[in-house]
Image (cartoon, rainbow, N blue to C red; front, side, top):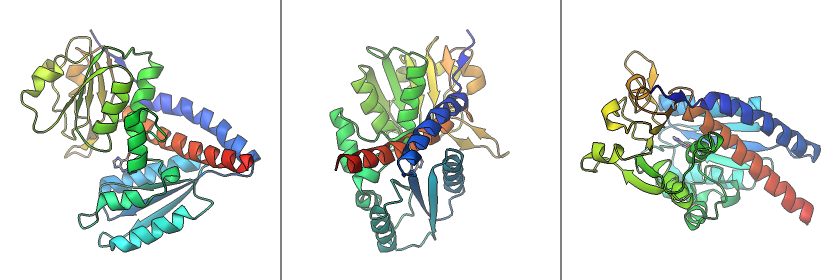
Length: 288
Ligand code: GUN
């Protein structure tokens, strides 16, 4: 079997046309959705992600503001900027690019973001709502993966789903969403014994470990669906995922490529959340 490619780039493009309509409707109500993106430090990958997010805003007619701090920024300066953005009526979404420099306490910074502007869905209040099954903002990467599965009409109830990676950004919220969708979810990570025994059982395998091509074809159940969240840079500068794509596509039924798979969907869902935040604010203002 050669797998069908799950094209995230094309799906993100389709979604963008629906965003344009929603943004136009907001503009007609004198609201321009606005996103602030904060980056602390010079991590090259984070710089690329932030640039892509700002460019996507521009293409969707969403206002964006990029705020760059040096790597040695004091935590108080970050908190002061977040407080300013919380009070800024032109900003509907605030995103702090992770990882933060080591001296910064990540949870304190995320807690400072007003929950109604937390378009990453990382604030404890939003993560709590997600855990309760009543999400307010769904973290962008897991949200994008759910959209891809939904678009391809992948049936989730009862499916064996194995997630590799237990991060707050992908693994944990992904597991919550899939549990609520009725799947049987296993979360594997760096301390998991006999990873291949788990992955070979998976009807759907979601790799978010950040290790280039470490999922080989023999770790994949024939006919499985593979979602590759990994974005790894090889020594020659090329990007690759966590899965050995060329080999695994001969075993899987559906597979996401890297680049062009989950990455564009993450950005699309960030736009979706930002537009949603602006819509909620406009609705609340109209109800007053
Ligand atoms: N770093 C890697 N992925 C993400 C993301 O989705 N949001 C933020 N804020 N930082 C990230």
